[in-house]
Length: 216
Image (tube, rainbow, N blue to C red; front, side):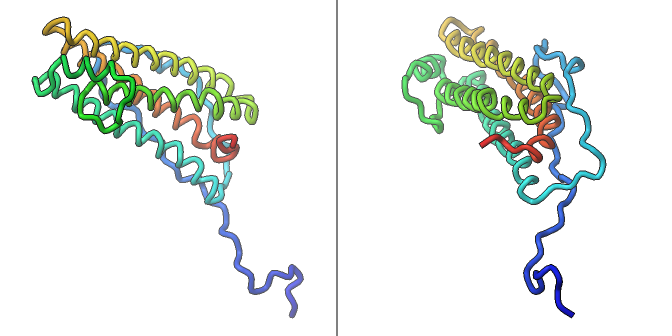
């Protein structure tokens, strides 16, 4: 009997599956004495329609956001380790201060100032891309996401201020023995704020990104 579809012997595409991308949990503990984000007031995108299935490409698109965030989280751990070195006296305030004043930084520079400034630039570049590309695209593709997009963009501004605070704390290292504690407080605040933000973004956007893509 002939195949009426004319596809006999041809490979079939895999059937779509549930998304299967696991957003990262928010931090279980807080390090800073105060917080800057009102997590309880954050809007949510709501669950996807029941029974929705996704292709392998859609799943990979959603996973990409988590992978990029994992890189930022790993880099943050290195910043924290270098801050510990400052507090332990392994790095001098003068080295950190001179490094932050350099115009060209190598990302693998061992000084805290150089590495922190490089990391600050990395986070800022990531958020700039989101604000100019991904988030406007998702707002157009799914207007119901507008409150979430507004919240994420507002949190990008908060994180920018936290990064500026870290930069100022590094500069203050040359002013006296209390500068190291300012660095610790700034790094703790950055840790709490950024990890909370990345988790929130993943929980709200992995599913819309699977359906709508990044916009390029």
